[in-house]
Image 1 (cartoon, rainbow, N blue to C red):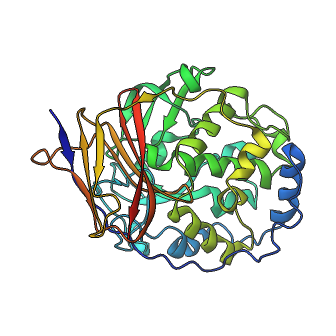
Image 2: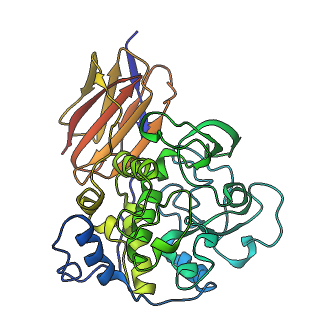
Image 3: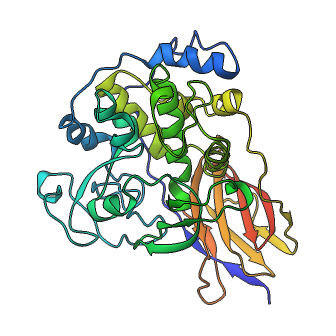
Length: 359
């Protein structure tokens, strides 16, 4: 039966501040690991605001102005991008962790690269580019485990993040230990934090022991984890949230994450993923009216869709819905601002991308 999908989308106008000077990347002219070293020389020597200073930075860098748009903490381990969050934290002092027992009790500072890797030295310990506010309980579950694709989950958080044994198949082949997997919405965010760390601390990273690292200062990552990070970077492009976060941290630390400003640097340095999922064309799909003059698009599909993505011309995913639920067999995108978009629809191992014009 032909299915019509409906989705309401409201976009917030985002005002950036602290953007990079026009000449910030002028010396980034190379390719491969030469480019990485050039970027290291640009972003090294940042202002260390201290461990307690992270909470000050979070007031602007990790405020939810994108999903609920309610000014609460934007926590990658509890955020539900397609519906109400299971719980929220205030950016004030009241919800910061002391003791905790359950999800939703409090939030603390999550080192995406664990502190034990660099022996809690500074400025690494205080670098907001890879330290985010997250639920204390989930932070504890994640512990020092590497990031990867979970095959069998032992813990699943309320927003769908997982801890468990690695899948060790497909793009994640090559590692069979315990890994932590965030939801798809934030996989690229975390990958770009790792690429930042590998670059900012190029001068010391070869001395760090960690399952994801190979003991070098150039590639930094083992082949298995390099491929996972490259695939996550590919599947989850830079978002407005990351851009605003990058700007806010730059205003505090005076350095930037180059892979948010220039996503193309990732492939220029580390190459492309070894393999990505192979899709066949999804047939019997129509989108109308297109062009649309009433800021609304209807989606018809003969098959149940597994995912809908709306992507702008810069490659940023504006909306992503997995396993969309039918509402009286109707699904549409409405409240769309004027512009040109790509609409990616996936069902099983089939997908299609439609061009959408709103005027």
